[in-house]
Length: 306
Image (cartoon, rainbow, N blue to C red):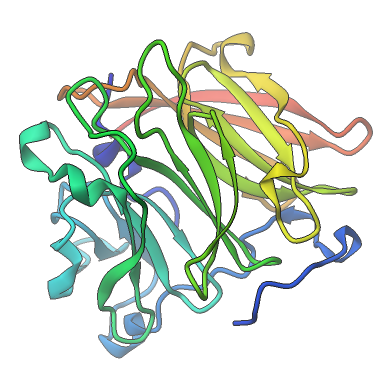
């Protein structure tokens, strides 16, 4: 991999049974609109604003950091149990779902742990395994990665997860999963897709799961079913980061939606392998939703350096 996933995730951004819903009920915009910060932030008297830090620069694993100057770096004992963490998502209760990623060297992680998604309880702060997948293909130096994307949908109470386990330069063996956050049951899955960034967006007519390809600079979306099913339709091309003015062949590592129909994409260099870089860079792309044609108008691209 051209840059380290564990480093890049960093501080990017501050129940009921699974039910069927009608698309008209979905509010326009980001589908994680209900997300809340964990309740233990108040319990431990952390000063807001705070952010979730998975950069591995302040602490191994997960940390909560006060955003003020000289702010406190807070970590509970279990938060480094899984080693370096990468993608994460928050639900409406403040529970954090996160997945391990290899960091710097394959000697510093356990391949068997890469197939787990962890949950950090909003009240106790304890981190425990939420979901573990059977290892279909052993991780190795050619592709040590497993989960690269997580996204929560407030409307269907679904956690979406993308894995590239078993993929290589010739074979795309990844999967996107829809997981019930209560039972941990896999509700639906789509095979043969290597995706990094994931996010659910409700437009005026339907609910879509957007994802960035791990193999190209392209962004795709899948129209989800009434209960958030991934297999309801086939992927649809949205745009390419390489086609916009000032763009490049970045892979889309993170997708975020903001009020007013703004989409922000973080582009990184990714090639399924690990190597450390002292000068970590990424491009931030911004687009604006056009309600007249349902497409995304390019706004800007900005190079960002940690």
